[in-house]
Length: 425
Image 1 (spheres, rainbow, N blue to C red):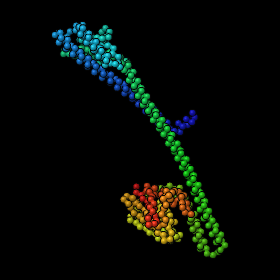
Image 2 (image 1 turned 180 degrees about the horizontal axis):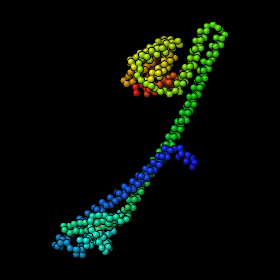
Image 3 (image 1 turned 135 degrees about the horizontal axis):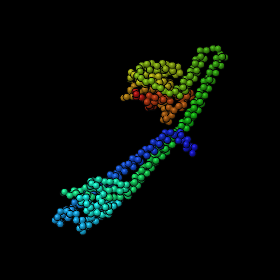
Image 4 (image 1 turned 45 degrees about the vertical axis):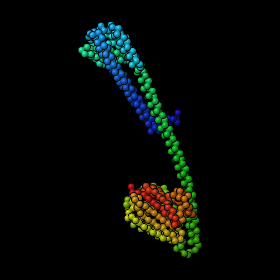
């Protein structure tokens, strides 16, 4: 019980929705009751009025028949004729056949406010002070009056019905409909509750799965970091130890120290960028500025391995965040540098394809194997002996922040192209 109370305490939206559903059900049921009451009254009134019109027609035909048969104007004494008694019984049978769900109680026909013919009518005086077309509701009893004029003579039709059975059948129908409607709403609410619980369980499962992934990722990162730092620190230790024993060629040792420290700083920067959210500040900027920065990056990398570097542009401006686009290109160039061998070539091309800006980085190194393509953008995945495997992951993260995508195309003649495509927002 306590668990259930805690559930409702922490699931306020579902509790609010349940209350709203109950209010809606109450209003709909009330509306249904009012509608059924209105529909019932309208149906019975229409039926009674139509029946009174039929009685009026039959009465008019019968009066004409008597006048034509006896060759005299209508007289109240016609009521004593055997034909009148038979006609009345036929009319009663007709009414009982019409009112099956209702109970037909009595019928009275008045001529000039005097009783002419009646069936099951036991009132001593006229039930009305003035004959007019109207329906009178007294509980479950319905009294109907119909003023009928034949030439200069006035007739009044008085009909009484017990409509309790009629109401009961409709009330049962209304209750059944309301029960079914309420049942449907309850089922919908239950399904929503079940779906909400399923979604919560799914979200909880995804949260746990994500936590496990992050934990595994953290383990991979820690292992890679420890391995790379150990190698760099060992190199630094050996350099310092050697430089302490041999006081010659200090310039070489300074260069080696600088390279190892820079490697550690680059790894630290990659890890910081891995966790950093990419907040873009996009605008249109000149391609020439970016091309000049890329040439400087290329020149700094020439010390590791000589290669031919080219920048070609078919557009004057690019749209995006220049800092992050430059960072993506820098990582792609470094990745290309690791892939090429002697007589290596790296080409960067800026162009536009329809509404898309396109950035291509080509290198003439080994193509990417199909099974590697699926993993190459995963964090901490690398086929190199050194590095964290965060460069291409960061490239993918940057281009997706621009609502773009990255493609890899292997060239049949040798080499591959990393292609970035995105549209201005």
